[in-house]
Amino acid sequence: MRNQIFALTIVAMTAVAAGSTPAAAQAVIDAVSAGSPALAGSSTDERPFLAENNTAMDKMMAGMAVKPTGDIDADFAAMMIPHHQGAIDMALAELRYGKNRQLRRIAQEIIVDQQQEIAAMRLALGQPLPPSTAAPTQLQPQLPAENAPASSMQMPMPIPMNMKEEESP
Image (cartoon, rainbow, N blue to C red):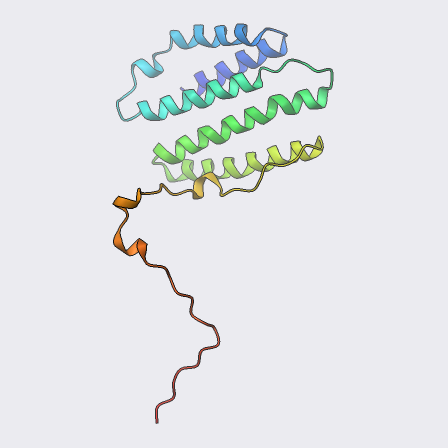
């Protein structure tokens, strides 16, 4: 499957680089994907991962289909930023569904590395950076208020650092 995704990426990138329209590149992807047993033969447990991964791939491929501007550097970054974001999105899917500790660690590294490279490309072009947010791997699902445990309703009280223990008489 990894080889198939890689091959699809290469085919679509080649089509875009050769001047094909985004629709033509997508048609190539659709034609290759249609004959793919990846989704049809997948287990029920794997389907959410595959669906999320396919969504990430579709978003990445659409984002990489840029119209050349005549500025090679800007065009390069315009194609590479969605490519890197696609890697981030796929790594997040691995973190959500994957079980292999080594691959999960690699996925975490991919997220950090790709975010840094996106920032470096934007800075190199003089583009503003997006506002800082928590890393996607640090976000925790929020429970609705009615389902929240009672202990979460308590506010932690800070303990002053300069408190002395009371001396015994």
